[in-house]
Length: 344
Ligand SMILES: Cc1cc2nc3c(=O)[nH]c(=O)nc-3n(C[C@H](O)[C@H](O)[C@H](O)COP(=O)(O)OP(=O)(O)OC[C@H]3O[C@@H](n4cnc5c(N)ncnc54)[C@H](O)[C@@H]3O)c2cc1C
Image 1 (cartoon, helix red, strand yellow):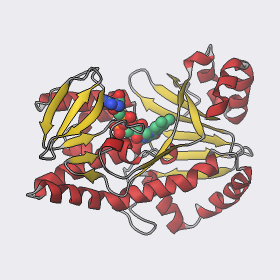
Image 2 (cartoon, helix red, strand yellow; image 1 turned 90 degrees about the vertical axis):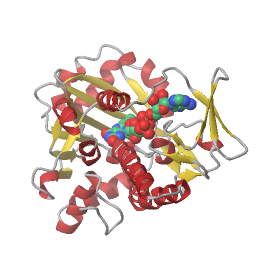
Image 3 (spheres, helix red, strand yellow; image 1 turned 135 degrees about the horizontal axis):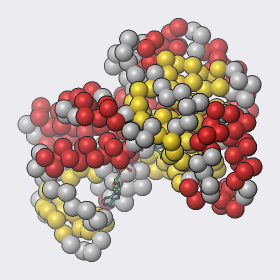
């Protein structure tokens, strides 16, 4: 939100979002594993549920207004360097653009270009992902909170209200990616009963699902880099640090990358120094969220069911300790830069 405010876009976005005041996660016995309120950290602090398309439209409009030329349907397949180190981009039809002084790689978790950038990187895919459905929010699902219900580490369902004039809500259901085909071939009503058993309030949303094809599949990736720049190249967003969406921070991190890169380019007189500054400024924040999601993901989505028992024991106790509770909320709000550090 701070980055969007700096760009002058926040006021246009907020009416298209749903105010989220609270994360509420219950276990199968209806005990609160997590009940975290943003306002406990600062009055007026809240999340904003929205669709990526809403945000994307807004950012694209602003970029075009600022003079950017947008080329659609031109996947870039190759990054080539001239003798002076400047980059050229070659699209799937072999058409070339450039040379450019600086190339920003923002091609997402499965980036085809980062391997050609010369920046060391390790990318893996999690065995678990999610089924996804967007529908109209039934009144029984309160609008101002992120709902999560968990069973063992193999059962997780969540609902994120995302506003807009249609009053939408996103449903996500955790699934092992190698079980998606079996789920698609299985009985839809059996699955709906499972979801209803965890969240009876979801009945009105489940009624909007008539076939498995209405749910899309999302895979999660873990991308590790020690620095997010190379010679005349910077990597932003998921291409440089995709993580599992357990903490819902991917968009925040990508927007903050862009803001810090712009700031570093404005502050330094040489490109090399600006790129070094960019990586240095992003390191602590990115590291914290990457390590935190790597630790958290198996507690909520894995075959390690013993971890689920430990989670059910530890989380309700941990959130009663005021310092820990505050750190949990700061984490959820995107502020953390280390176990003890935060931007707030
Ligand atoms: C299931 C799921 C739930 C999530 N939930 C949340 C959440 O609640 N909150 C949150 O903040 N984040 C969430 N995220 C993460 C968030 O979606 C990402 O972090 C965010 O979209 C990253 O933005 P990006 O621009 O880096 O990459 P992307 O959004 O992946 O965009 C990459 C773009 O590059 C284009 N592209 C790819 N290859 C090429 C190429 N070769 N040439 C040209 N263009 C190319 C793609 O078409 C795409 O438009 C979630 C992710 C998943 C999978």
